[in-house]
Length: 54
Image (cartoon, rainbow, N blue to C red):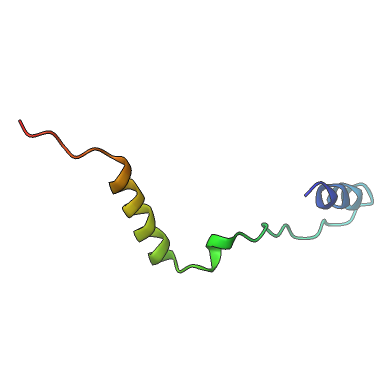
């Protein structure tokens, strides 16, 4: 990360356009978005208490 920032800064100082920024790969990114949303919903259900009856 720091190396990329240094190269981008050096390119700017030389008057060149910096290389495009590529976000670091994460293991969760290869899972389909719908599956990630469903997994998040499940975690939310597990962590929130059920509503109290009045």
